[in-house]
Image (cartoon, rainbow, N blue to C red):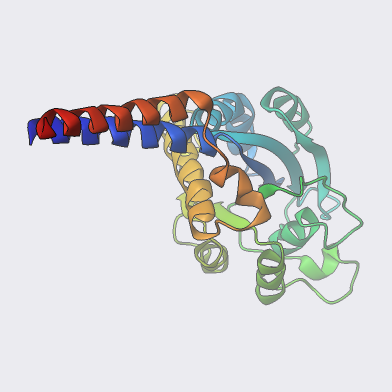
Length: 266
């Protein structure tokens, strides 16, 4: 019995190694949609200085990740792209362009904009990447009619349909429990809600704890997405052939099991 348990442990270790190797191919394109109103200065600064840590946690968990930055609610109200998808260093540089001179926050419009559904946006998502949208704000969506130039405003229902059509994940980083519409969108699209106070502070101990928890949750969400959608184009990497080293370990474990069985028989 002890020998059987030992071999079973080897087989499990090999399978775990194969799983980790396959997860490394999952691609994720993440859009940060950041409120540019006057109360968001600390949030913007902490995002800029901690994006490297966030990226490292995701990469360490097996994701090939890129970041885009959309600002919304400045004095012109309409959303704008500060950077298309790029790495953490370029994202941090682009985030220097965020402002805090607005007071109207059309978050629904920003979400549609980030999905290339409004305003002529052309964020270059990879066709085989999991789409992740994150909104950082302390106010419910407002001014969507203004942002759309007086046309029909984007609403929660319209944004919900766009997220569904794009098979996109959504996260809400807002005042805890204060913006039900964003919480609902997150719950309905594979994401979670997080307390903005974890970033809206100068206490770097609080910020570090938030970034760690947030990145870990985002990693798990993406992996869970591919468990739930194994045939989706975005998740084909998660079912790829394991690396040779993992196969070799699995073969060694199985050979060991066969050898033990021969010893028992003879």
